[in-house]
Image 1 (cartoon, one colour):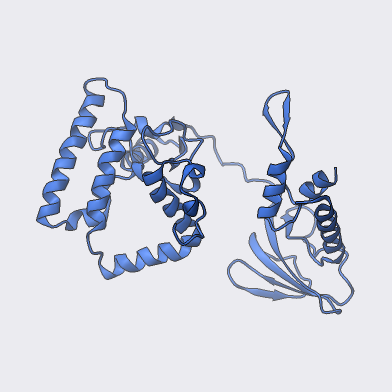
Image 2 (cartoon, rainbow, N blue to C red; image 1 turned 180 degrees about the vertical axis):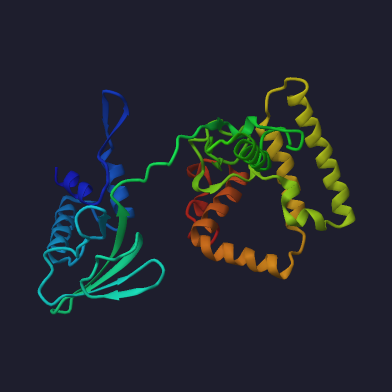
Length: 326
């Protein structure tokens, strides 16, 4: 049970319910591996006891919890209780405004940062979330549409619905018919390889979108292809038109793999176009904002194209994104 206590302290589940009325334990080795990924040693009974003791000591000595949540509209927003006398607090709002002292009454809604410094020299930093007590109710009731984007194909898409089609639907539903929302299926990045995984609930990443939904003609570089690449792209467009007509006019099944094969060829052509300085700056801003997570995702996608989606079957040097081979 000590391992279970240690796991609970770090938010690691030791059981799960795959269906109603069924509870299954998580294998102990998995719990130990997940704790290890969090920097918590649980490899031996002695290590578990030591890690648990360290966590309990840290709780006793901690000035602030990792996250503080305060709600407006009810009780006054107050600083945390139990701080040593003389502890200095400083709140930095999400807009960068710095507020010193204990006056939290007029903090704006948002996700802020609070720093504490105790007289004994201990310091702490926590996330401070100031939220309304209730989600505001809409002024009026609204209706909306639920659509599976892949089935929303039009005479401009490539055999399956894309973001261009979604844009048209949203504008038409809202402006012409007063709809309040459009709900779509998950659009996360799929697992590479054909045949594709048919479920959008098993993506390769929940942080990044799937480029199969792009409207190729809306990418700025589309207008700047040189004549040679333009001729090749025209051939791709002709193939896309055949896919589209087979679904719209002949009742064929949507072929996501065929659509992606064409879009991948088109994107490779567009990637060869030298971007203008403004476009290039936007791209580098995008890379900086997404950071290492994007690099790891792109690395996995590229390796999966070569070696298949199951990374455990890859050559051993490629199985970690930190490795030189990867």
